[in-house]
Length: 136
Image 1 (cartoon, rainbow, N blue to C red):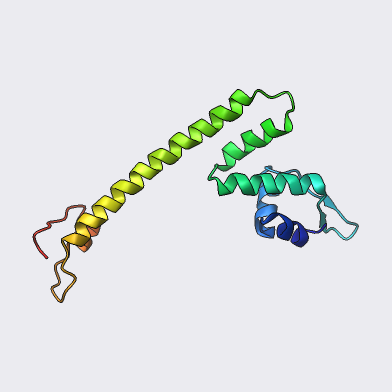
Image 2 (cartoon, helix red, strand yellow; image 1 turned 135 degrees about the horizontal axis):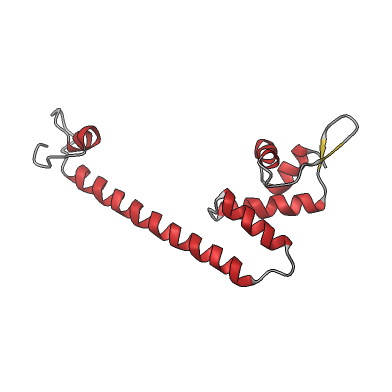
């Protein structure tokens, strides 16, 4: 299977397949006599694993570790669970930051009249980090 077919079958773009090869996340593909990449069933399984891992927000480093564990039949599932638990904690922290950002924007937006006046707490916050909410 060529790179375009592998991309279509796995949902990973050809550009990302090349990138994953370049950074060593996947092994270099076999080549035809003309130099075209050739992918087999194991390559497709690995690419699908990577895509699903990325869909869940795992970093490249985490995926590298998960791939190693997936390929190690003697692995301890405790290590896999640790990686997943750490990732959950990271996502929860990001969610808290996003909630704080939403709260800040809601507050700034509620205090900006959005009319013809030039004063705006949203722009003031972006420019200086300090918003006077009584201006608009």
